Image (tube, rainbow, N blue to C red; front, side, top):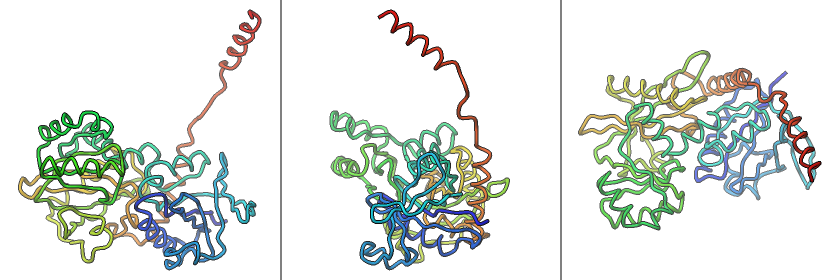
Length: 374
């Protein structure tokens, strides 16, 4: 019997459109041995499916162009989804697996993973804990430091504290990191909300700007002569497979959202061999250090002047699931492997979640004694 595989994409995230692209690419290439159920998460968080959901053109005006739209919801505590139309549930469907193509908040940060775990549905990405840490740039730094993995000097800034002690925070940043600086909202991906600062005036304005996206801000040393590299890891069978290393070309001062997703010919294949080997080793160390699963892309910065390599960030659900890096696999092989590995992992992780104890019996006696005293 075919397994029922739900494919989630979209979401309440600034990366909503990129998630649609990843989802549609996955739906186009997913193995035919599964019964696939596409679920589009609208920008307002509502889950829906439609008859023509695989057509890219409908997402310019989903309300008008989508046909036979139905709302979808999880059934709490059980591996089922329910379809709702005209205010009534019309169908209940068992779910064997969830393939996540969701980027950014509420899809990549552990939120969706938590909902699926509460309904006992296995899924393709990192678990709740690992997803949340990888999404949070400040927590990522803490783990990198604890594992003695190379990363740039930084400070964690809380906007509430900044508003109370503005001058003190600014001086601390200038003293400990020194200009030029780069500011990043802690829980935002795809180079959105990032600002480079060369002086106090730019710094103060940039902090207020970044706070529109997240009250916690990563303040990091900015490298002016830097090269950027990507490398992906994926768990297949009994081993972690490491992708090729790709150098990222960029037109702007930083590798922006536009560069990453809308640029042309932005990737260069030639990577110096010893540097490529170093990147692969560090990518694998990150995969284990953050307890990752599924496809994970690690982004690196290389200081061209000092010849030093730094880990920039870790993407637990990369755009198009980093397929461009995994040259030895077809998209069908990749998605099939994600499903099979995720199902196996789910079976292995069915730990004891409770056991009989005397706690309630003791509480009942204490409660009864308390009532008798009154």
